[in-house]
Length: 127
Image: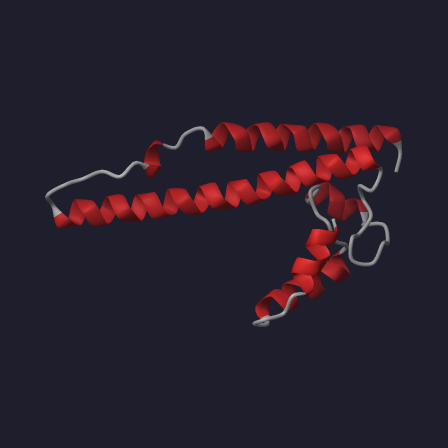
């Protein structure tokens, strides 16, 4: 991969990292609010659960972005951790934090659906 392409991905990943970081600063929705009204408590609980889900999703994405930035520094960006083949540039353009080519990603997705399957864990920890 060319230096120009790597710098483009580095900027895009850096922008994504900043965007996620800015979103995670607003944690007011996680506050536990008390109310004497049962419906208000249910509504607040639902809002808090939604905010926690968003925070967890953003945290996972932030880790993926940071891993991609480290892979750029290490010179392994754009190489699938599953098969060591180059990841299609169009896939990288769409999902620059990806660890897998499309074939390996599909295998990981299938494996995640199977209870007790540890393929995903072993592939991700190798990255």
